[in-house]
Image 1 (cartoon, rainbow, N blue to C red):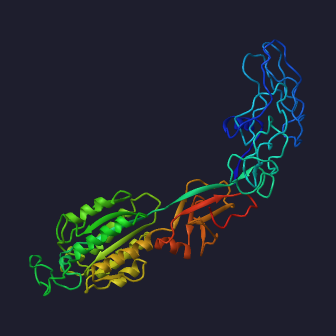
Image 2 (image 1 turned 90 degrees about the vertical axis):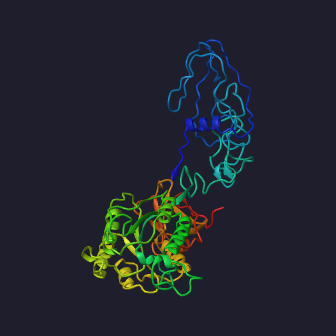
Image 3 (image 1 turned 120 degrees about the vertical axis):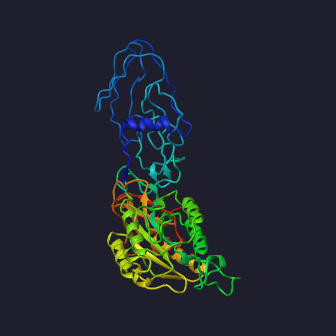
Length: 466
């Protein structure tokens, strides 16, 4: 709940700062002579009386050398000796918290109080009211009987004295999507020169065998590069990183520590440049690559969810560092260890002759692998994975003052608070997490705009935001 406490001093400040109307008050004057003084203000601020006598001071002007005057109820207030300037009372506007009006020659109130120039604060037609025709009091803060405009014509939800609770307004805040961290783990072995549809080379320079029909032949590495470019550009809710295997430097089974491109919000052009600068070569040390990827992800200190996207075209080898030794068991064990460390492993199998990749995906906690035997298959697989990886978590720009009075909206429609099909708080009360059909809408791109209202106790949230 956002609270506004409007006491005597803050009401005076609002009257000076808001400036929303033309005022009308009694002519003011400065006595100037010593001892002009006057009687004390004898009625407490806050009276609900709509009468000119409510807050009277016979002469609240400031004398030149006169003695002090005080407010009887409840704290002494020295008018004090002074010179020049208008007095205090009477500033108001006929249309809200106005800048118009002048000092009453004898009234700090001067007439009707808050409400003569507009509807009351937070009543049906606006956050308004105004300081009447010259006073600080005389009407209820939430009266709707006066005419004129308010400070914020549309108003807020509830009244100051009504169901919303005393001195309560509604705050609307925005939310930003929490990104996911995804490390691309890409096979760049020599067989990535093969056709994506067949186990043969698209050019004679790539080696043998050469595909019989070269007219429509698309090599795996260029197809993967193009699909990754498209995916990275479109996936703004993911922070990407890149690791290649075998590593571009070293022998055929070498995997270096670290990554080629660290995960960051600004990594996309660097990844695109890196992929364009390397060519397929060497073998397929999948187990060592997955282990190195998991080790790196453990060093990424942000709170984002993290995953590995493994794209490969063949059976792992390099067991014991030997290119001639298959290493399916080692790869499965490394993937299971990554999953155990909290990193899901998604798997794309490129080409027609992939082996054991369902066991890889299942060890990584992601079900089945995504087969890709065409450039479009690759694009579809990457899109499906980014949809699955992108979070349905959003961070509110402000922590709710009262976590029990929060309404959450998706594309301006109210979402139920429901952990299975709606929203719930995440790790803290500044994070909201969507589930069920609402998360599906976000993941598919059908919905994206998240907002929240911090409301008033007992006040119903509107079903749709304007």
